[in-house]
Length: 216
Image 1 (cartoon, one colour):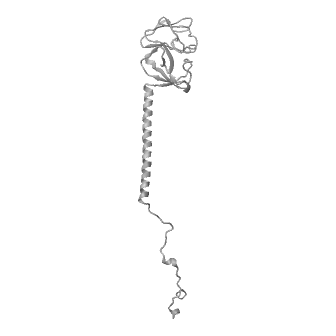
Image 2 (spheres, one colour):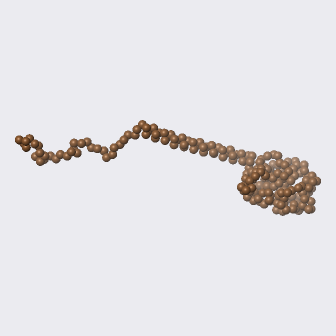
Image 3 (tube, rainbow, N blue to C red):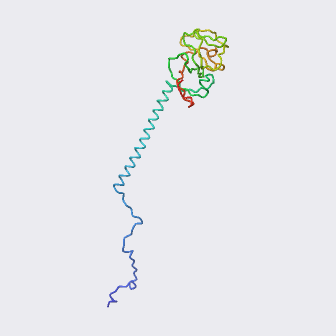
């Protein structure tokens, strides 16, 4: 009797598997991010945004500063490089000099000025109202007194092409290079007197080379 009540798989022809009775499981289990994780991610995103904003703000400030410095250098403090040897030994080729744009020019000042399309750098020997002369021995005379010029390299040539002695007119300067043998300056009619309107500025500070940095 017991055998009659049993249902055998062979009798029905059905095949039963345990997997048929269980729901399908996904290949991987997806876990939803927690609130703490979301807040941490938002905080990181805000930090990245703040860093980017700070960098952009810094770049804008640097651009403004560079523009202001460039404008200041152009209007008040032009920077020029010495390209000739006429001011040796005071200034050498390649020296970079900071000039000050000013209307106050005194005897002994080193000035930069326009001569045609060129920029020349020379030392002021005489200003408006002064009398200047150069004798046959190469001494420069200012208002009947011999100039003491410890900065001069070589003797001042008396082979000038302007008429000396002469008086300097208003708003004019008589300029000489420190290297007197090679300097083309006010001794030559080609340069002559320098008008105040030609002046760029007077030498203030040497910024290159590094071992020569200092006030002029």
